[in-house]
Length: 439
Figure 1 (spheres, rainbow, N blue to C red):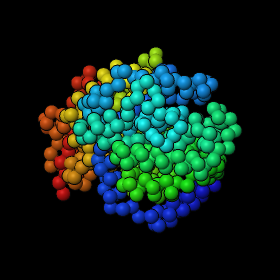
Figure 2: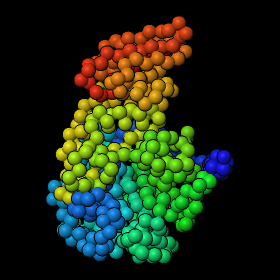
Figure 3: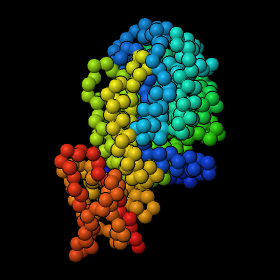
Figure 4: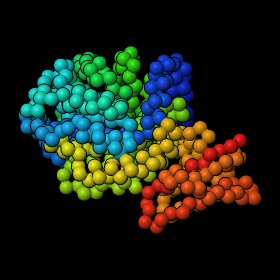
């Protein structure tokens, strides 16, 4: 009961704050554009790729920080080709890329002038990774967004929280100095590369969710200032903070979770916004975002397609992560999976791009999306070939989206619609039926 009361109080406070903040027209248009994209690719890449043990290796491996950072002088991804990355992403049917401009280890993938030299220009590679990727995204018509870590395992002015203490010790830091540094870097990123959004991560190391549902925050990040700074440059804000969304945050994020499900525990106490775009992020390589050598468990193409459809049916985008290796190449298996996803998207993408939740709730085995007068039924699970649901509107026509052939639709005496699909036993992909609705 206490948790419910606290949650209600938080929702009331957020609603009150929301009244005081009104998004500008450009902001609302950018949010709508983002929601229409529905599918993006996350890229986690940095010095940790050379260690091939995932993006948290400095902290989880309990390494000496100075020894870890010397990898900067050996980081030379000779096979990095921004055009190839963009080709793979676009062929998969994704509409945008979000890349780690700077992860928790503090290393920056662009020639920033705001740091102490811990960036790509002091490696043997000496090329602007983000600049090259930005140009290729522009050519291909893809949007580029930047992940930016709030937590920092490198700088002396960062106030170490629950996680960073394992690397930095009980470092008090100087937040005024650190905030100035962050704003300088964020300004560079926006002014130089014009991303669609800045995607923050790491606030959670200073936050504790109490048993009564309240939050204890050990650091005041002064987010209003940071968000106003970003909005003044007509860029959206997203924050992977595992908390209810704040009024000036434009995109609500769900880490490894569908909105409202909290199956992984990252969304505890996180209500789902009904006014902002939603994004669910997840990994293609098991339980790791950065590249990990020897990991053979990858999601199948059918898995990824199902995740895209289920996310869209919840009004969310899916941001599927790929971690390139130290040479700058995507894992071969990830490329193969994405190629198959692209084949499905080319014939069924109409049921994903620009859609919103269909309003027909049939569990996770059969989900729905909608666009205009068209309702799309996604038969995801091969074991489910019949959808029965109430619908008042006339069904003017029904067809398989992939083939254009008519689909079987009947009405029960009570007026329910019954849609039955014929499925090849070997076909494990989502089968989409398009229903054109009349009055």
